[in-house]
Image 1 (cartoon, rainbow, N blue to C red):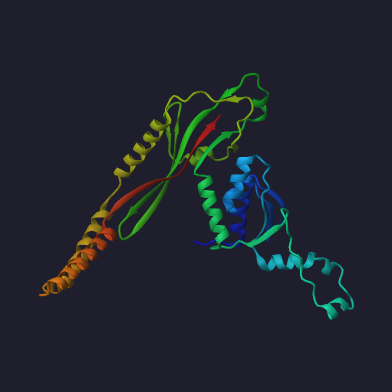
Image 2 (cartoon, rainbow, N blue to C red; image 1 turned 135 degrees about the vertical axis):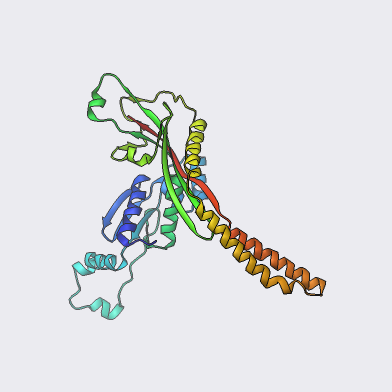
Length: 308
């Protein structure tokens, strides 16, 4: 998988906006941003500073960055907007006698650091990790429309537990599936492809006006267990011919290994024979790990979704 500069910029901008960062300047080639406390904690590796802020209660001073997505276009943009480009020295006297004056670095709390963000860069990988960790558990509220805000009586939310599961069918080959399931905490109804239910809804971490949340009838642990049982029932009904074929390939590989070590295990020297036996066992274990069919299920992320 790869990402072009436009895709990288859209992803980074989504992360910056969702974490409440302040956009200072933006072009198709870059964005200059003042990080929010959440993003600063995730991206700047300043645990001692944030420990000091939380311990003393002083207002935090977050860092600012210019993230460059297209270095060539950004360089051209800087060249066109620089004071030298706007007011060139016709005689070049200063440059002739003193050389080009280097740009002074910005120091102090308001300095802006510059980093190029490209696919495979350390900074983009860090943003991927921060987005994955920060979005693992969410609690979102569907926003009320204008009519509901003006209504005399509040409307109840219906709370859903949504879980994104990854299912891996693994042997010497591998296939993955993603299942986004939702269950109503009020009725126990399970919704396959929960994303369709959420599509088009305006969701926010803030509780909408003139809305309230009734107590859930289904405990969270019970709701999660029902989703797991639903997914397992679906998986049990699959065609598992692939696992039989994998075991056949495993038997063939083990037979080849046994044949290779057959004569080596007849070594008269006991110490050498012991070493060969250990190698033989290790090779068999390696092949068994690679070919033995298995189904792995993991929860990628989850959340409570309060829907109207």
